[in-house]
Length: 99
Image 1 (cartoon, rainbow, N blue to C red):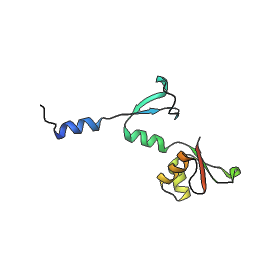
Image 2: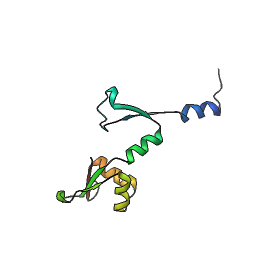
Image 3: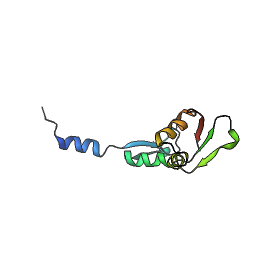
Image 4: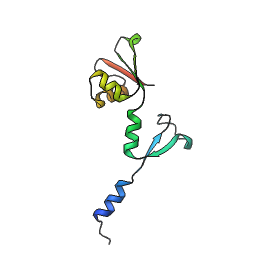
């Protein structure tokens, strides 16, 4: 039986790739819509998605942001809070959507 070494773990996890949906639609599994990215590339791509966020009940006041990071900075929230607004479509007083 072969002993697993530190080097084995290094190479196993260092080059792990993730599948990314180019159109951001996770139900579209066509080959021309998929690309392989490192976890860092995938995270950067997700953070750069444009989005719209507005207060509940104020649909006419939707604010467009060029990225999730820009929205977080403008709103004074963390990236994770803005991500929750966008993925759950509601968070406390806020609604949001990816564009």
